[in-house]
Length: 306
Image (cartoon, rainbow, N blue to C red; front, side, top):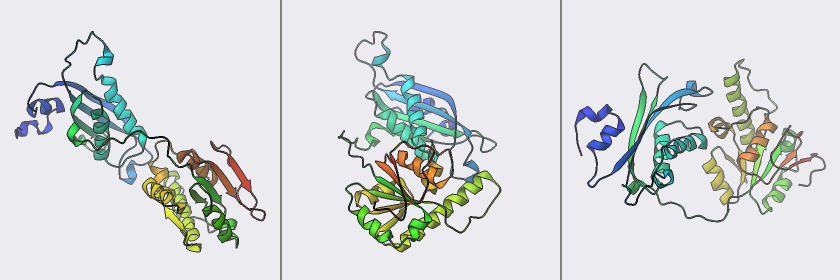
């Protein structure tokens, strides 16, 4: 492998040629593909999009059979742009490194692909282009999971108003919820104490989400069976181990590509019900949302028997 410093900032195609393994490989490339996307770990990068440039080179095995000018027999450029689009749509990301890794993996699952160079650059964050480049081969791929029947849990989502959280019946309700066959996720709204007012839409959004998380911790303090979760990984683990999860919404809401349109707590619960493919949404002590993709059940606190 060459150590020529000239290649440090060369296009991935030149780097691919200079570091080519033994044996002939063909290459396809995507140059200067620019997408507007929300990405980044800094607060200034949230709630706004920026231009991100993609340069990708894929080394592929030469075709041994006749092509017959048939696009279905090659790794097409569309598969490269589709890998980029799919990785961007999966979730909001903080790091270009994570995005590059996911793009490379998607491309390398294609049967013809052998090695992949992915360079990603932010074009609006400084006087120049700020970016990363990775090189991955099929030998770097994780084991592909074997296809299996749908085993994704469809949790029972329960929204508790403040009066329900404070109700002396809370323990009895949790007993009944814990006896259900499907996992249970609890959602809460804003606490009784008003959250600070910032006068700015994005900062107010963060303040309100954090206030809901404080309410989630207050609920968890009332019963040790309630476990506060803030990430999808924590949520999946909690459901797998049959815990009663209490959703702390900030990270999942702020990282979502298709985030909720509204900020009202019940509307967030309705959005989250779709996000986790809930079986239904039970509201105790709260009015129903304007719309919801799963069945909604509304129960009065005094009469609630779950």
